[in-house]
Amino acid sequence: MRYNQYRFKFYLNASHSIYLNGVLGQEHPHTWEITLNTIKLKDNFIIFNDIEKNIEKYLEKYQDSYLNKVDPFQTLNSTLENICQYFKNEFQNLLLENGWLLLSMEISETPTRSYIIDISDEVDYNKILDYGDAENLNFDILEKNVDDKIESMKKSI
Image (tube, rainbow, N blue to C red; front, side, top):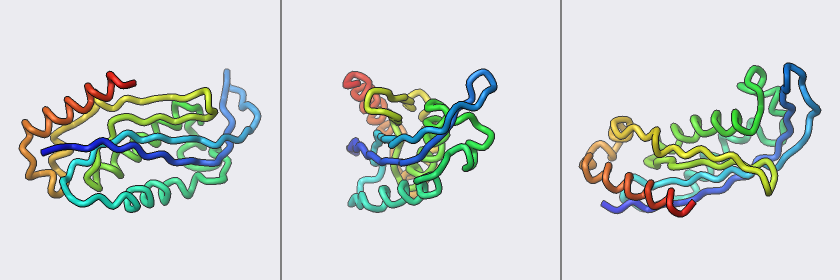
């Protein structure tokens, strides 16, 4: 079975303030660019709009907001790193439920500053096999192909 890699980009307009040394800084806006590098696990026709709409729907509650007033950032410091980690966990589950594997995520708060999370060391093949048609995949083939894609991606970054 062949796995194809896809990259999705989303934009989030939101402002935030971060705590430094216990002091809340000034609110300031960003157009966050969110990039998801993925693999499609199921070998069927791909309807990109479904994935894009799911991610965009999830992001709606954060769009045009002050992040510090939206869960979980009311208690979680809304740093670039924390925002990326939180969204990574959410997107990873959303994608996996729809037959996609998240390989890495990048979030940029400016065109010159990004934070990247490489998920390759977090891949839980047993979890992948628990979803829908993916349970019929041969584990050895899945593991080899995903590992090959991950290594290829690391070399290109």
